[in-house]
Image (cartoon, rainbow, N blue to C red):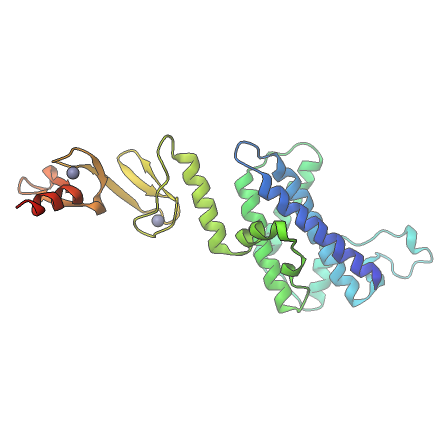
Amino acid sequence: MSQSLDLLENAADSLNEALRRVRDATHENPRPYKFAVLHFTHAIELLFKHHVAQAHPLLIYRNPFSKNLSKESTIGLWDAVQFFKNEQRELTEETIEDLKWIKDLRNNIEHYKFEMDPRAARLAIGRLIRALNEFHEENDFTDLETLIEADCRGTYEKLADEYEQRLFEAQRSAELAKGNDERQTCFSCGSPKTMVRSGNKLKCHFCNDEIPLHECVRCTERYPEVLMRVWNDDKGPAHTDWMCDFCYDHIFDHD
Ligand SMILES: [Zn+2]
Ligand SMILES: [Zn+2]
């Protein structure tokens, strides 16, 4: 039994290390993602082995009947997945695909021939954490959350919650697209720091809504359409004049 607990403890260490690397990586320095993928894949393998060892500690050996167990090799990730399947504990098709993807990435990293899209890696880690949480809950396995150390909690929560992760990804993407402009709160969905100027529009990287910018006929500042009123459209739609709310209020205050 103690071997099984060792596996769980090591899985927790690897999981926390993976989260730290995700936390430390930036757009300018994506290198930590490489280690995030290595640690994360290792964490899943240990976690799955631990679950198999819970059924019986000897089951982590390829040949549990061996006369010399210390020389026996132990099972791998796919053996564990098949074991769960044989126990009618099935991972979803999408989760299996994500596992294959991240295992391939891990193997490529180990052979120094990888090209990694950090965003794709982050999304896959997020999807896997959520899938594992569901799988663990359905099967009364250890709650992953209890393995997370204090300094990793923020990163874990960002990845474990689909909305939080989508918001985080949208803010990153807006950050990359913003140029010299500031990121704004979206006028449509209200998400913070997801809206940036794109040509003569504002675009939200979370809800994808676009809001046209117009020049105010009075003060000539450019404002998003939602903060303006049609001032004079009697020349037809091709010649709509817009006035910003500030100028509009100003005129009415002085009438
Ligand atoms: Zn939005
Ligand atoms: Zn104005």
